[in-house]
Length: 319
Image (cartoon, rainbow, N blue to C red; front, side, top):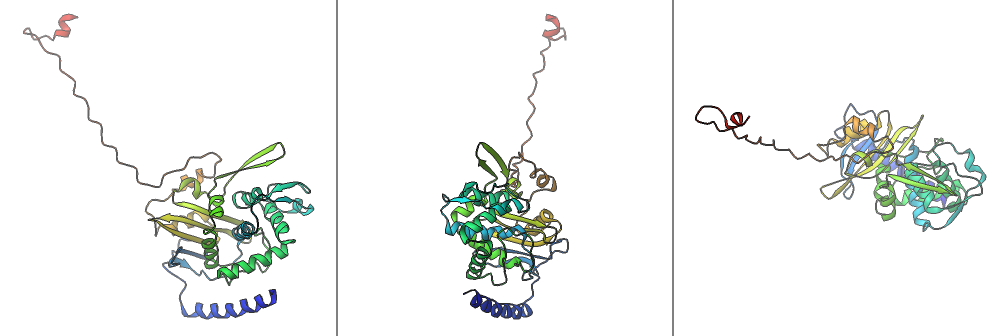
């Protein structure tokens, strides 16, 4: 099955390469955007609003976890018990610091994967569902192919950099579109905080998607970063009863790039200060809507003191 899938993927890559030669990939690209590859599309029609080189293969970093979450949600109901194996201690951060041999609820690991972007949680889920992370990666690739993401290849569940693991901004947007069709995914991806309990210990983790804290149209998203991959992001936004998906790879200025790309859709966007504040642990959602103009309050007219026939006011006479 895997060999047949590889042959089909090679054929699809030839077709994609031919299409790339025929059609331009720069759609109202902005020179101020540092990401070498990005795309902004309307979810249902998949019409491209703007983009740059969005069929270019690049490392996905933790945006990989969108597919990890899809596969886990479609194979688990969330109540299963997952026992962490001895390898979890060697998984690099970001992590929940799972303990080998300890049992965890699957839904907690799924939420930890998406909200906290925990690499050890993604690994534990992969081993539980697939028997090994390699087998789970094959499941991820099959799902990507079924979705139509033909230019994507996963080799692990976390997105930690490894050779020959890649996706494209176009494929990443396709994957997010599919993920949004899963109600439970939308619920988890919209969570601002995740409370992780292990024994008597409870830790609250904050979602890395800053737009959830400073931009009301944001409904879901996943960030990613490694030194080699640079900043990556895929997110979904609502406007006029439609949903738009933004995917970008290899950025040196993630939130600045995202805001610049979204300018083609929104007049009111978070300021640099609001995005910086969104990094703090406790922050209220900032409204993107125009504030209502407050009318100036009319000054109350003060009654002048009546003067007596002598020309002096009654008040002064009283004094």
